[in-house]
Length: 166
View 1 (tube, helix red, strand yellow):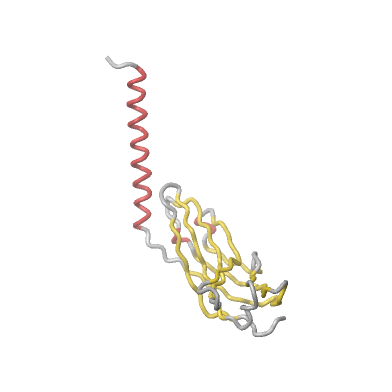
View 2 (cartoon, helix red, strand yellow):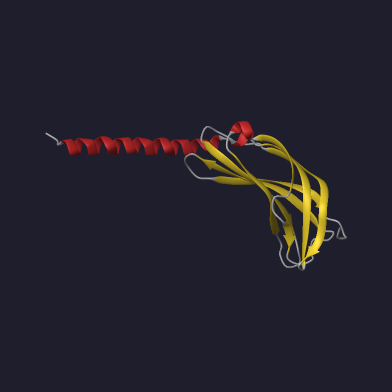
């Protein structure tokens, strides 16, 4: 009738087709999740604010409180989260400087409170930071087990750097 190779090929093809269908359904099911993450970022202290090598540089101590549990579904592998300072200058409509980041591996770790200094240097090329109003924006990238990655952000406005260097 049919050879062993023909039958093995048919079984493997059927199995891979079913696996691809299940992966597609898992990816589609993420579209029904409507996450509602919340976050609060407080600047506790401006550790220093100086001109270094012709560029403005600041160091901040922040209090970060976030609840990102709603980002997790059964298809979420991990969530990459970072905080960026966003501001305008005469040369650029949008400047983004990453200050802190973390990888959240599980839903149990998605509700957190961290007090930390900025992990990465807050530097502007030039002297545009003195007296500058800026937003702190919490960005997140959800990495699924299968399907496409999606990203979003939460903008927290109302921060300002001092007029004078310290």
